[in-house]
Image (cartoon, rainbow, N blue to C red; front, side, top):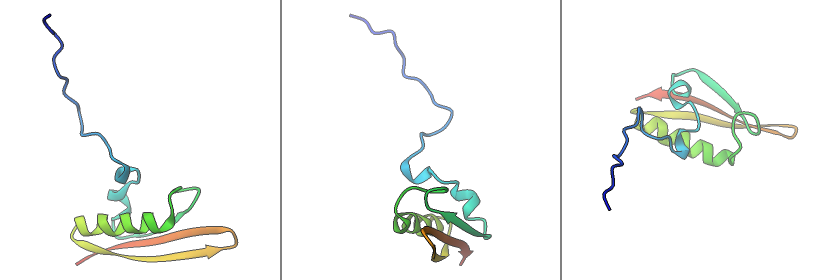
Length: 82
């Protein structure tokens, strides 16, 4: 049996779980507040760890703060180039 199907090419590499967030935008140096349930659904500490990894990949660090307001939890991040 001969197979005539050829592998296909893709326009871009498939996204992974760590690319669910617009990291290029979030790592632009501005102060960003992400609210759990609106901007992310993962545990806040998971998003915080991802932000640190993304900052390191870009040659910097990330300043972080977790805020609690009534029943809302937010993560504030700011990328800083070293």
